[in-house]
Length: 174
Ligand code: HEM
Image (cartoon, rainbow, N blue to C red):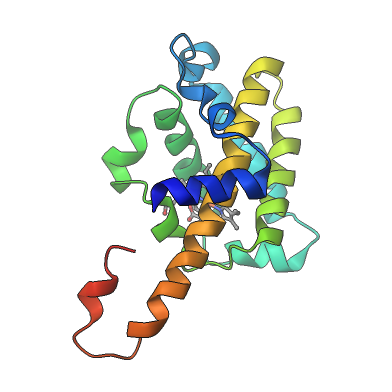
């Protein structure tokens, strides 16, 4: 399932799997290269844009989340995913990106808007060099569509057992 979600994510995002995971290559440790503050700046910059978005439909997806918490969740995840200490999992547990995004309307349009804000945030965070930006953006773009594909799949699979008592455990793995 993971494999086909990644293929779908590549198709939809236009990012090859190898490019999406260039952040994991030997010699590439973006946390060591950029440092803690760059990640804090990036996520602050990103969420400032999101919470100020003139597109109400997108801004409202975040209406029940506190901005400061959202910033911390995001930079701790990025740090852990890009070679730094496991700050996110120590505090929140497994990232489980698909499950955690399930409550939100994560459509293709929402993915594009998320990517748009992240591109702008990267472009205006001065302590991130161009090569790192490209690697990060490929990972973000691919992951955005991975989340869209995963949430879609779960919603589809949930359907048959939705109102069937005793069938709950059958849906737990999705
Ligand atoms: C596709 C469009 C996306 C939408 C609409 C979206 C929306 C959201 C929302 C509404 C939250 C809750 C804010 C909070 O309280 O933390 C959230 C959390 C989060 N998102 Fe996304 N997101 C998207 C893509 C992504 C991508 C591409 C990544 C990773 C590269 C990501 C990583 C996270 C993480 C780590 C959290 C914190 C989860 C938690 O600890 O509860 N998201 N997202």
